[in-house]
Amino acid sequence: MALTREQVAHVARLARLSFTDEELDRFAHQLSDILAYADQVTALATEDVPPTSHALPLKNVFRPDEIGPCLPQEKALSTAPEIEQGRFRVPRIMEAP
Amino acid sequence: MSELWELSAAEIGFMIARKETSARAVVDAHLSRIESLDEAVNAFLTLTPDLARATADDVDAKIAAGEKLGPLAGVPLALKDILCIDGVRTTAGSKILENYRPPYDATVVQKLREAGVPIVGKANLDEFAMGSSTENSAYGPSHNPWDLARVPGGSSGGSAAAVSAGFAPLGIGTDTGGSIRQPASLCGVVGVKPTYGLVSRYGVLAFASSLDQVGPFARTVKDAALLLEAIAGHDRMDATSIPDDVPGYAEGLESGVKGLRIGVVSDWIAGEGVQSGVTERVRTAIEALSGLGAEIGEISLPSFRYALSAYYLIAPAECSSNLARYDGVRWGLRARDAKDVVEMNVRSRTEGFGDEVKRRIMLGTYALSAGYYDAYYGKAQQVRTLVIRDFEKAYERFDVLLGPTSPTTAFKIGEKADDPLAMYLNDVFTIPSNLAGAAAISLPCGLADDGLPVGLQLLGPPQSERLLFRAAYAYEQARGPVPAPPLWVTS
Image (cartoon, one colour):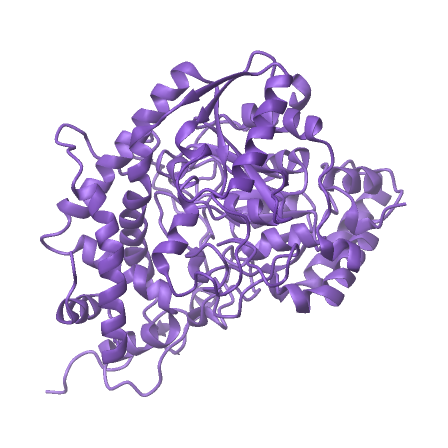
């Protein structure tokens, strides 16, 4: 199926990406090509086939709920673009009242 | 007398253990080769000479003190730049992680430290392991040591090129849809995609979590087996890790293939888009295996023709969710002066990600969005079941399956860069093993009529690595030495 420029712009908003008009056109074209190829899959009759999300027969993996060593706060914050008082700092989230 | 950089990992390990050379001398020989030739190859994004020398010195000190070390102690390795080393820049080939220094080691890196393996550098890759040529790296493509105008394959192209060029006898890559086997094929080296869950993914930046698997590169089958032995094993830090003991992969290599039932995947041998030179080399390899006493048959696997399209729904879907973490908050690039947090997220991601990563995030977001989930992602997961069933049926008749690794030899840099779908077709023979969580190996089977290496792929069920190594080793011995890339001769 062919994607419109508006659909691409909508998906971009969901994915937190932004594109120029030229990029929107190019992506609409390229994604449509890839989806047309993927339509081979959608056309396949698979009614009685269960889906596989994980190829190996591993079930839920549990461990005892014990406190062990973990990354110290200082190291965990060492990669952050901005920190304040031992926390990750971000730009404003809500409008000022 | 061969140069140190020409030797296999097993040979180097043996010489170091017998004090015929030192780990330090081995590391220095490889570092100086990298220094003189990597400008042309661009296999590495970051060199780690201090780390490599410190590991080598530690190995030498232990040997001087009479300690018995593992077979790879002191053997240099190129690490794909998607595995974390504590404090060492780890970019995943992306601008968004240009200055990222992870605060911890991947489990594989821990195991390599324990084995005394010096890591000489972080190897180039397609951004976040998405690609088949390394052209999607934000830091420029790597070049194939067989012809510098051609790609080394991808996504682990830097690791494959490094092993092929003699920068290190060992490499580590990741294989989500063929990203170890295809570059191994294009660079004329050995590459193994282990069973899903055999090697820990802790500390490996995630792309498609139900498919990603870490594995070895080497120039010989035995070296690849030794390296897999060193990095495999259960890890409580990875919930998808297989809770079994690791068998000795380098043991029993010489048992041969007499009576081994090998199924040739007929649709792959002379399929559409398969270069005739590739078919020819693979047929010669089949004759060699037959001559060694293997029982050769043919098999057609009908679901495999849907595997590629299923993969290009599943992998992008998982990637779109995994890469949501690059939001400019906790690590990586943050766009400056955004008016609020959403603008900061959007601008950081838009500036930080390259085109192919954006394309896959978009594709995945679309395939998972309301109204399309069942038609795309759900359907692709059903195809995955069909692929697994076809494999199971095949393994009732055969012990291993065989085909080419890649439909073509190495292509020119730029040749497919503007056609995403043409690029995706590189992975058509490698993807089924990823969908099934199964094991596969690619090893050189000579040169095509264009003078470039061809890869022979052997496929087995999950946890069949020992069998695959044994079959690959038998073929390798019968084949004899492969020619060295021109880069070996001219340097």
